[in-house]
Image (cartoon, rainbow, N blue to C red; front, side, top):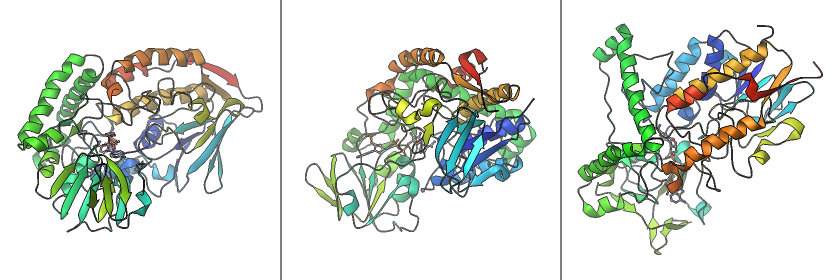
Length: 489
Ligand code: NAP
């Protein structure tokens, strides 16, 4: 290595930490992680709602090189995942490389010097050869645009900003939203509430969750015979790859999955009227498939009503629906998701010629070669960028593929000090030309979700199996990029 490039990573969630681990494990340590919060963890630090857990089993939802033999259960709780992230980060001495409380406001590429200048809210300008935003797709809560939302006089909060000081015992609680978050906390809070009203705009496709507690025997086996945990990881990975293919390449595979979801609903909801309300009216897989054994039984309890009339307004005392009914409640919980299509916002990123990334993406939405590189934004490599989210599978597997690719770029640049790389516009265009027809054939086109932006373009999801993404990103090819030397170095 001639000169190890300096690297700034933005964000200390699974993406940022994963990138740092990849560099560290390959002997590259000239990096700093800028983290806006006071702790690492990303979404696993932020989302502390009751029942917060991962619906991807932990043997797969973990770094391939850091298996954890003693997960308490197959589908881990938020605190265990956050603890795992902290333990692994500490093992590799990453906390010393993280600047906490450093929120990036803007970053500008200095063409003459061939460096990124990155400003943080504390007034500091950081400088680096390579900039790696790793800020996630689901870090900015989305509140619905409902008339009167600020007039409500009771407690109200978003699921990702759970207000633990609010005691829900004996309260009338309104829950808005039926996504992956709501499905986890509704069964936890239903027994506490005097009454829970679920305001459902879309019914969810729900599959059974094959969860299990790992016993001391499991832990001993995974510890002493690691191949057993690897075998479980492989079995889970294969199942998710099957589901990914059902969403993309082989739609015929979806039929047994739909049958399973329908049987799950029938079995868990004997009341026909309620079952009708909870039956989705859009194709399976369009929104993220959900896994729960507790959601439907919670909705069938006598203290729960499922309201399917659209919300008209929030009032000082509750929620008014389009039929004019005023639902008086004490607490409103917004499980209304995240601003997933606003990649890298609210940061301002300026590339060659002062070009602003948000402007480049304003016409159609975010796009990037391999989800990683954007033309005219040299030495900028994104983790969890456009079209790298999975409809089925572990995002950590995808992030490892991205980190390996970006590490190869960093190694390449280490041999060529003071040069910078911008992905060629035609390489990026060919990538998009390959991607778009694949996206057109997916079920994600048939409803609204955070996978699509206002123009209808699917900006978030990867259209294929995760192994295909891994294959596509396996090797950094310099000819995909234009190489230039910085003049002032
Ligand atoms: P989400 O999936 O985007 O769901 C938002 C919900 O709010 C939807 O049901 C939506 O209805 C509803 N909504 C939004 N605005 C509304 C309005 N004005 N009136 C009525 N309903 C409204 O959000 P999420 O549940 O927080 O999940 C987001 C993503 O986070 C997931 O897809 C997943 O990737 C991730 N996540 C993962 C896990 C895990 O276990 N791995 C857990 C939680 C979250 P419509 O469907 O009709 O739009």
